[in-house]
Length: 345
Ligand SMILES: NC(=O)c1ccc[n+]([C@@H]2O[C@H](COP(=O)([O-])OP(=O)(O)OC[C@H]3O[C@@H](n4cnc5c(N)ncnc54)[C@H](O)[C@@H]3O)[C@@H](O)[C@H]2O)c1
Image (tube, rainbow, N blue to C red; front, side, top):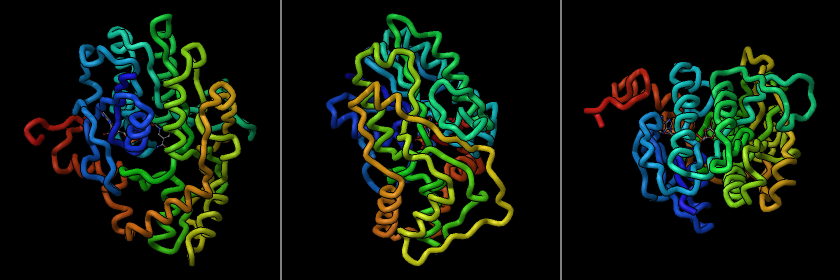
């Protein structure tokens, strides 16, 4: 299939693109390149790409694709809170516009990278399946709810959207991120000797490796249409829900000499939920997740050791999205709406 992947040079995209190509798909990317040069290691696939802002995409650019995999977004709560109107503009309005343009251009499949953060504060402590209530606590989470609600009505015999609600990601990517909980705890443990917990350690999180997220996108892409048409899937494994303190214990066990430390003032985190991921495995048996958090911690530790990661590098603009965006704004390369200032490009 000929597939357009937006956000293809981000943390997930950098791992997803080679997997799609290995499976024989033709990939074209689309990214505004906020994180150009923010590399942990070489390995970013060189695919034909549109270097453009999602908000400016033209319908003609979408003609001829069999599917759009839509990853591009301001991707996490702190970045989403920087300018909430901009977050809704990119994550919500531009995403819905992209879906409409794709449909008008005759693209039959639209795979949206949604998030389990749309469940937000869960009532009770049961496992949340796809029919659970939305309860987002951040602009980022709310933007995912709005896209799902506005794109679902576009579904018809010519257009099949699918909503992949990814759990919190972890794992090694050419475009690493330091602000995701597993990556963060391993990075702190390796570079400072302390497994630094920002909350009181009690919140629950569903976790998934970025290679398993990529497997899920591939399985949905290749599935018969009627199995995925206008469906939402939690992406992860039901057995991979953890409290933060359990992750910290595993990190301490893997990273020699490290010890657990609670950051002063860390209370309970309102973002607390556990999800059931049985639907995707039952509906799409080709989707076979391979990773556990324990193995992911080992992968990250080995990669950080091989790289010789320092605390300074780990907490730099290279791996922290918010810092990188603020740096580009301070240098007047990006304006307040996160558009490139033309002459500088
Ligand atoms: N990482 C996670 O834990 C996680 C979990 C659930 C869902 N998701 C979703 O998966 C997707 C990818 O996440 P990620 O972790 O790879 O994020 P990322 O920040 O690493 O990558 C996002 C990419 O999108 C691009 N982008 C942002 N705004 C753009 C715009 N206006 N126009 C064009 N390109 C733009 C960025 O340049 C970047 O390369 C996002 O939609 C995110 O919400 C991520």
